[in-house]
Image (cartoon, rainbow, N blue to C red; front, side, top):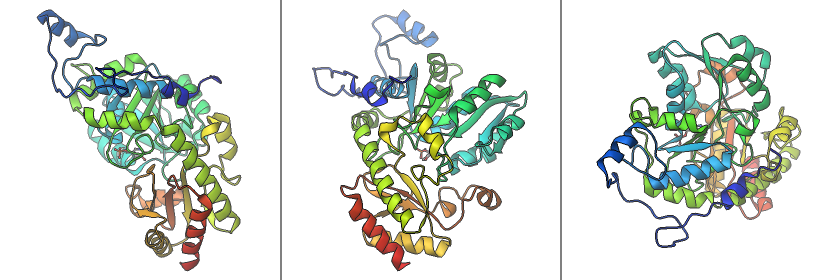
Length: 397
Ligand SMILES: *Cc1c(COP(=O)(O)O)cnc(C)c1O
């Protein structure tokens, strides 16, 4: 485990294009020909290495990208989807049947929260939300029907760090699967190495890093990934969230620079939050000693990639938060936009946007107040210059 370096796993991929290109060729086809009719029948029954049937099932470019993701996460296999939500919903619907239960962290992305709370009950699947930093609460919520323990390695937007080894121990004890959304911490945290059974990503964010497309990924055992594309019972095959080959190709190229980007995002965030915090601002950032899981993070991280590119400024009121965001956009700190992981800084107030699906009383319970501004710091060349800009904006609120 200590020798595993996710960046080098990606670096070592040697993919040749059809004519010796340095990038693999994009297959511009929805369907694939067979030389023998019998082979087609065989492929309907089981996966055959290097053999393709139909692009919703698999296509060569999605295989290249999936293979890169499996390497990065240290899992046997992976598959890609048309969005992060497609990855999460497919994993859940593949594992759970009517009557099953999920124990989920209560601080998760708003879309996932809404899917759990409002959509899954239609299928008789019950989700219990718990404070997943408290193992006694996780244990107490598990019943004989629990199939999944669900969390985000770094949660959106409260930046809570999941104690993956402890959660994985409980999952194993009760025979359920630990499913981890690793969107905020690609390369930084390798959940599978700490016992996660399935790792999901929104590639829309850091992995692609350009805010030019929506995409997702699922990493896990070969058996699980194969089950997703089973023609008779696979969620990915039957719900059809396929990622287009052209997008897949561009995401794969962007993945090649992910390690450089993550280091820069993390270095910028640590520099800026350290200074903003010293100025007396209320900041949430895992890299600051006052973060509740500052120590824990350092027991599970791949240290060279840092504490990540996201931090939260608590402006106390919604008015102040809105004023700060408008000032930051007008002074070109970045864009007032949802999403994260872009080369430019993006910021939004999660209370009224990406986490608005979470009911107010629950938002208050987890500290997700209306004065919070979530910042996804960009690849800015000089963090001191960015810090000065943000400081000036805060002073004007
Ligand atoms: C954005 C996000 C998602 C959803 O991903 P999409 O690509 O927008 O579908 C899921 N989880 C987390 C943590 C996210 O930030």
